[in-house]
Image (cartoon, rainbow, N blue to C red; front, top):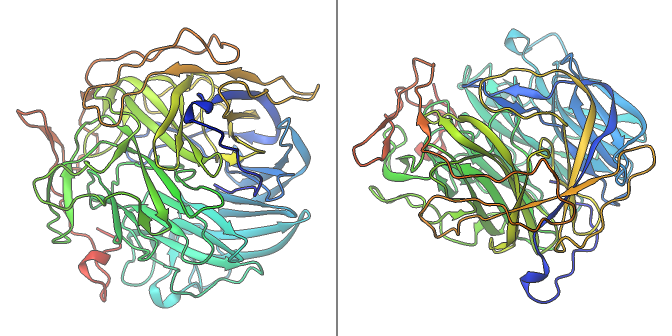
Length: 576
């Protein structure tokens, strides 16, 4: 997430001052210059994900920009947005491309990370695969365009392309650097045919930086990327690989470093901890005016640690504690140091005792997890809940009945502040950005969100909605919309969430007293039956089974990861 360096929300007295977040929405406030198709299917299951719409606010707080892929899937559109009414400002910029993968607003324009066609006539990607480029616009005119992979980019390491970027872009004014973290597949060199990830840095003049903090092929099959700015390279980075862990890999740029979590994975599947396809954004946040970070993800927990036979000790694999996902967070005192313990590598032990659970349910599933810092002291964690989930093993995802999006305020230690609130109309489908003081906002599409079955597309829309969360116990005034747009709807329903130390399923309920104006769309989330275990249709994928004790056991991967010729075992960067 990108910050406007504005005054922080003032802490006064006990944490009770910050009651539950107040959610306001601006349905269909922005008319899009071209239509937008809001669904992208998950890679393995075909279940619907929100197609990301990057959103960013300038450092001076005066302008915001929204980026999206048009419904024809041929152009990325960038539209300036008013930060009060969330209506269009000026004429949109249209850039040929295939994915809006990251956006940084500046006082004089924006920088866009997008997948685009490679240029030139030699060393082009196979099968016409796109590459990633960073494109800087100043005062409505393109200032520079810098390819981040493809022909001529780090050829000695092997050339790469990017069918799906699934990453993010951040900027540090102190360092004078943009950093992009994205998925790659190699088409030359030792890793040809395999998937990994890349971290690249570009300075204010548009020059690609050849520095040790950059990497061309890092974590294996990383479809879970987290990146946040720092005062100097390397920036804070997190990767979720397919060999059994989530890493704070700021110092290593690969699948090693500080182990945040053990996660059940299999070759080629990292388990969608940061949302999977189109999901790697607003999951790692920096508390402004500090070196403290917070990371949020969806997790099935970890039990029964065993040695990863492909990588060898001390690398581990695990079985999931549940087939459904819960919301987990981890806090950091700096870009490369956790405030608490690392995840265990002790064989036979539970592997999730270090996790700070925001939810801990054996029944409901939780997806689309995001986090954003509201101030130097507070952050907002948000997630979607599915009841009656049908959860795929090994480790895929869950379908079910969408029961709303929840919003929970936490402090910088990771402690909950107040209760979570839930809304069934507002969800998160784009970056969460600071807008003013004590408030964050994000885009979404006003539509019925259905997670009951696979779906690869939706009816294109020509309107974008926005929502905001603010602190202050419901006393914060709702944003004032201009006469040309609908007034914001302010709504929130309280939800009881189990304490992180609890081992029992969550029973969620609705408080009788709503915050601000009650919304008829808000409904309680009731406890449900145990999730159903289904076998994925992908026949070559190993199938998980349940033991008599109820523990889910996952077979070992059937193929070894490919290792760089000079890499140590812990630096595996792709797999077969």
